[in-house]
Length: 134
Image (cartoon, rainbow, N blue to C red; front, top):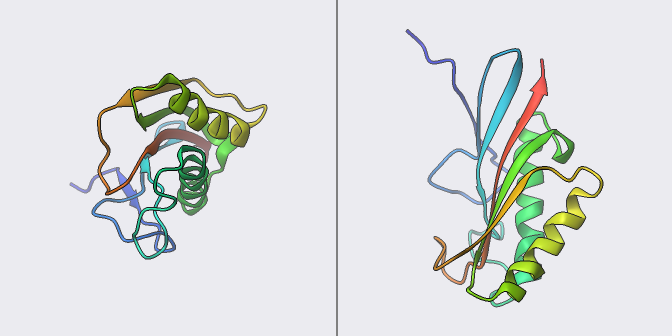
């Protein structure tokens, strides 16, 4: 029996050991996105030490992954923003960039300070779930 899950690959983004999104049919199509990381096209981490610039690159990565899946930021139904810091000011700096990118489409979100993220010099990561009508 074949799986109903469809993995979405984003060849325009940095090579990563995971699919950037997955969908499963049910009335509307849900899109589960892997954490959007602040990676350059060559796989290196963008803007080491800069929370705002890394958040902006994460949003760009998220938008590219959503586009490959047939969606956009306005189709996102929730996000989780992870920031590698124990400083609330650093979390707010990253959040302000993400919030501005979503504009009036202010989806339910969780903002978390974490100890460390997966790539060298990575400070920000954004997880998202989107839904589109088929």
